Image (cartoon, rainbow, N blue to C red; front, side, top):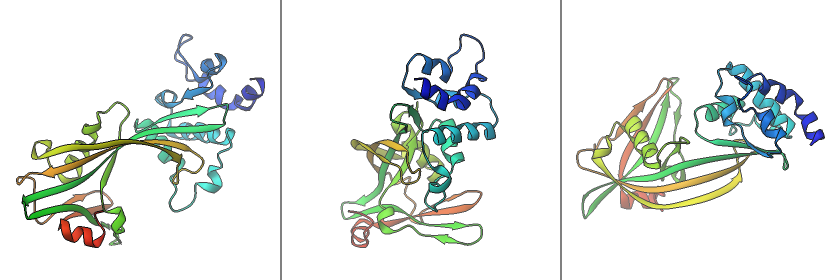
Length: 247
């Protein structure tokens, strides 16, 4: 315990300054009480400036031997600020396991496919066609990446609310215009490719969505953001299977 406390002195000093009063819990109090697995989300909720929060998160990663400076610079990896934003936005729970010198990230994801059945002979499948950026760069997903949509669930959010939120924000379709059928829930645990060295548990909820005639637009949909526009198109189910959009 003494060696551990010495290694974390810099972090503990910063966390101690966050205490609002003598009775409030700090990470220092938790460690003193021999709590070896600590949820760190609550310590990033205080009104500390973003750069200080980033600095503290860097120190935590450094002290448990996560080499973010060399391994988090690849095109497919996320940044420290993106991990911090995920914590602040309550998209995940993050635990520091002192004994194993690991960070454990826990999140829930909603995954779904969207269909429209015109009649028993004509069923359509919705996929992301492309993203057009403001500099006119066009990004098209590989077929295997177009076979579903997904959204991270906020910590205290109902699963189906995350799904409804995505459809409302991306496609401008109200939840009264489609039906939801849950398929399965699975739990996967693996080291994150986008955040090397961080063990992540994904709880994945799968759904099938069926749009009503009111929600169906044969021209598809588009979502306009500050940096890009995303286009969604319908394709006949049989054709989608031949092209590899559907299993």
